[in-house]
Length: 172
Image 1 (cartoon, helix red, strand yellow):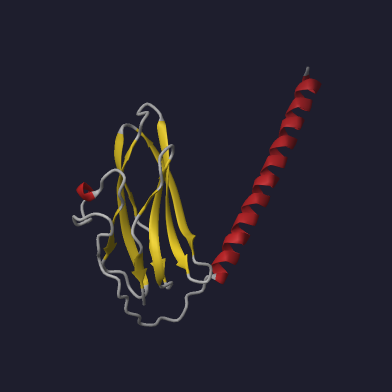
Image 2 (cartoon, rainbow, N blue to C red):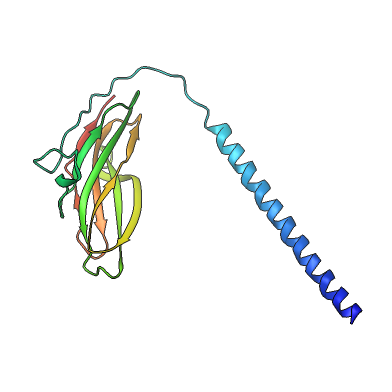
């Protein structure tokens, strides 16, 4: 009896040791990658830049500062004041209606940038989310940093047509 218990205990200790070594290896790799990523992201020298974009509702005739301006099938868009340098944050809102309130509906936001070289809209930034329930006012706040050009925001809801904002220009 003592021999079988000792064998089981030794086998469990070996497994625990293997798991511990694997966890240490994973942690070391993660810390090394994080340190490498941080080393490559040294801040650039500061420079003063004036951004000419201003708050402007894109698709809604009412001001887009309040959630009430959001409507199904439309994206209301406004720019947030106060970003420093050539960084601009926008707030996009819309109302998503879930045809099956007992199930989760998935939706995705996409910030697209116009590429004059190819005459196409290219994905610049995306975000996905979802909710369960009947209707929800959804909000997204993408930021554009040091990249002037023409942009638009798209909202894709599972099982529905993609809606797009009017284009807007960001300049530094």
